[in-house]
Length: 168
Image 1: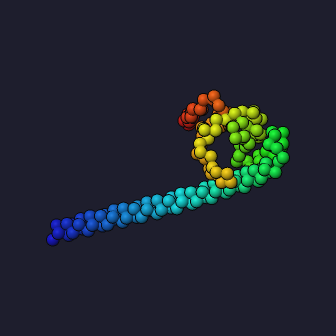
Image 2: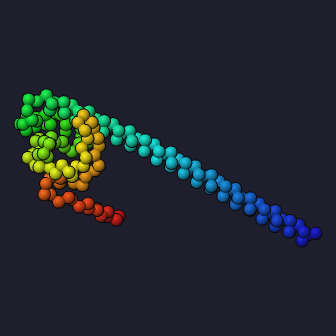
Image 3: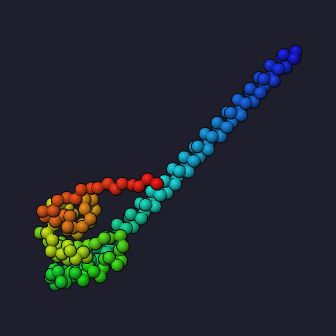
């Protein structure tokens, strides 16, 4: 009888240990699922916020560039001396996300620019891709380089360089 009691005690202890392990595993699974759901919700919120920011940035740039275009249309001529003040007044102070802006002639000559070194350059218009029809706005694909000088005729396309991260 004493042997049966010991066996029963061992079986109960084993069953209890198994129940505790199963409960801990279920709790760990629940916590993992909750953590993943929270991370997914956070990523979705960041993506929505980024999309909203990009949309507002592009729309702001579009509005300023439309206003600039209307100002250029009202000019008696497209001489660089008349265009340069328009660019200087309207753009960089109100749009910190724009590095610069330029007015190009149909042949690719930079008539006016917010970057003084670009004025007079001849841009290879083919490197810009297909331009939109008059009166339409289109975001063109990204091009390598930082300024219009990188798109000038005879300029070699800049190479992309990777930065090394320092290990800490």
